[in-house]
Image 1: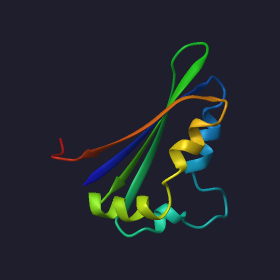
Image 2: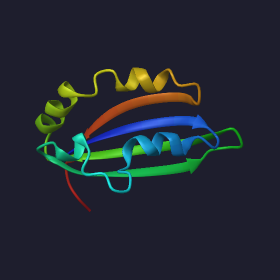
Image 3: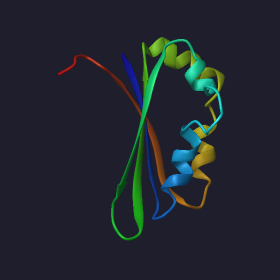
Length: 103
């Protein structure tokens, strides 16, 4: 299993804007990501850091690194740059993990 983590620090009160980019709206079908072969699941987390900022973590689970790369090569090459240009996003970084075992 392969996990991509998208990590954001946003101005307080703006976490919903990031979350909205990753959740399915009422009445919509599966997103392009959810339709990709090898996509397993995604989880969204929000944490208030202090009076000025919140953390948003998006974990996206794939069957393998190869499945993730197929999706990443098709769609998200400029996604991080686009997020970084929004005035309510203070920090944005992506990283990946290979799952080696389960507890």
